[in-house]
Length: 390
Image 1 (cartoon, rainbow, N blue to C red):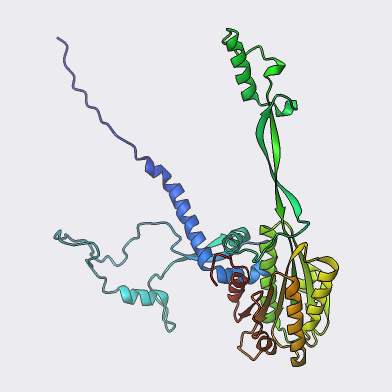
Image 2 (cartoon, rainbow, N blue to C red):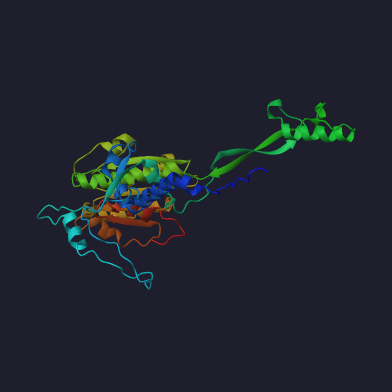
């Protein structure tokens, strides 16, 4: 009689969730980066490295606790292990480190002596300009955009949405052709695909999905007089930099005209607008006269949505302010809105803003920029979505 052998079997199940650890960590990292971008948008928008590089570079932003979870060795060798009584509840404090507050202060330093304990970790992550644009631009839109006459027709895409018996061989629909041949052969008692005749051929046809885009023009006017210091010019150029990228990213048919002015105004190239400085006094009406001239010559209000924007420090000759108000009203009759941005970091008296505060036309929008983060807030103010309240 053969011996009976006892066989032992072990049934195990592999935890496949562990294989997703790398993906989860990557998602956790990406979520932290997105949160950091969102929370730091005002500072990132005014980042000098971005403005000076013309948007070609990446920037680094600090992100708290970006490192992975890990076991840390207890150098103090404190005893923190004990047996509970089983009656604790969620939220109860089970222990306190008597040195915790002292360690935190020492780790971060108090400005008087060096600390000997670790502080809060910050890790820098490289962020592309495209990621910043995505976070910023999703909050913005061009206000009061209207359908104008003679709007350009833009082909959005091509859809293959019909089948016909005649067409180009390059557009033959193989699946439908085979099904047609199979059905015909089945009716003849042949359960096969072949032969395939010309009458079996089916061809895909398409329609062009088109969209009528309203054309728009942005007239960017900037004060380049001697009173516009380095900070003032940087703030104005930062705003126009992001405005330029926003509109060219989200709209296909937006044109730009750049006007620089001191006591006189002239149309300049985009490169000169963002790079060259001027000097002299300030007569803001010169920019408005030039804007009206440009509108008259190139941009019929029946065909274009017109958006003039003017940035200045508000140091205008007092005798010119009444003329400016009249010209702003004249420009608004031809425009969808008029945006005035004033760089005034010291809350000084502004002759131009003092005059403009009496304009009650809803087309007139203004924003006073006092610090770099206000570039972001000005963008939100001028280009806020209609569903949002500012």
